[in-house]
Length: 203
Ligand SMILES: NC(=O)c1ccc[n+]([C@@H]2O[C@H](COP(=O)([O-])OP(=O)(O)OC[C@H]3O[C@@H](n4cnc5c(N)ncnc54)[C@H](O)[C@@H]3O)[C@@H](O)[C@H]2O)c1
Image (cartoon, rainbow, N blue to C red; front, top):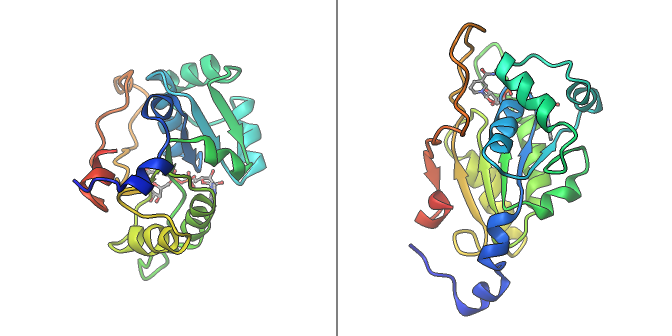
């Protein structure tokens, strides 16, 4: 594992404070919203960021397609101070981890359209702060983490692997009938398939 240099260490946040910082979920769709609710159920403060005001409004009014157990979680957490629903990207600067869950639709040749992902990554990079982990959970091809996160972070003067961290952990959500057992109260362990430096995968 790479150790941060003295200068980089100075820029990292206090570990105890950092551990209490929120997790941000960027893109509150079929994957992102249940992820945010599972993180809340596990005791985290969560910032849910979406570019769609209509989607945010639907979530606030509970008018969203969720498993019954997730509907209960949503109504429990909607007015809770630990859950921020926002379209303001400045909120990302408060987060210890930023999970990007935006759509990556494929065209008729099965080529993924990374327009939303490029926009979300650009927003996350622009607001990244030392100590933060930026994680892609959208389905995408090899090299996306490097091209849309690592290179632009480095371009901003942030040292990836010791000062900020990146990882790729694609979502494994499966559509399941409403009669299926409820999701676990804690988020399942995620499969991290890539990271820059061992520390990036561990953070
Ligand atoms: N749906 C599934 O069953 C499933 C399963 C495994 C993996 N995935 C993958 O997960 C990713 C997300 O899929 P989904 O089904 O949740 O998508 P979705 O279309 O349900 O939701 C995406 C949300 O992201 C928001 N968004 C778009 N651009 C944004 C931006 N720049 N910043 C912030 N928010 C933005 C949209 O407004 C929308 O609310 C995709 O890569 C998909 O391939 C989906």
